Amino acid sequence: MTTHNAEPGSVGPADEVGVRYDLDGPVATVTLCRPEVLNAQTPAMWAELSNISRKLPGDVRVVIVRGEGRAFSAGLDLSAARGGGDSSLATLAQLSPSECADRIAGFQSAFTWLRNPSIVTIAAVNGHAIGAGFQLALNCDMRILADDAKFSMAEVTLGLVPDLGGTKRLTELVGPSRALEICLTGRRIPADEADRIGLATAVVPAGELSGAVADLAAAVVSADAGATAEIKALLAGAPLRSYAEQDRAEREAQTRRLSELLGAGE
Image (cartoon, rainbow, N blue to C red; front, side, top):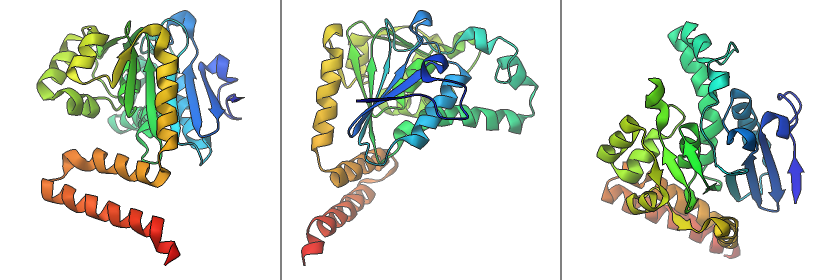
């Protein structure tokens, strides 16, 4: 396994920035590594997450996202948000609407690459996943939860809205009514409820989380890479298609697979 630090031009070594990624063949693991503050997130961490998306080798099939220590992520680091830096809330409020939106688009890119159709992404969630932490997990294709995990969309407690790519996936998973309740109350959602309402792919005892995620990653890697990409695209697009459109998408995907698998030998 190879551990990688931040690239030149980023804020500093990975452990200083608060994000680390490790490569083990076709599996990459991205770790939030600020356990002393429950992996609270900063703009520097988001910059490094975006960097990782650009430097992943092309043969990576699976990306695992996890948090070091007792929690996946306690959300936005409020000391950074309320400070005087370029990305503080006060600074963002002083920008023009278009400049503010552009800055937020940059933050979103740290999360939305996890939806890339060429990779399968798995969030390994233990402890709290609050706000930005919840949205980081939502941007992953699958979420394996330890039985001590708790989700919360807490932006409303700051008078803010979720803006890191999580609202569409949340609505798709639990429906608009329940998504609204989750976002408006900011309440804690325990692992058993997350499992019941569709937020969790699976819930396992805390001591078995790493093993369960490793087993799932191995199963994904063992599947045909071309079929995996086609299946992910089929399912991702399904909510936007009619039955007839989805049937057509299936036919077209299968035609591509047959051509790739058998056409070269004809």
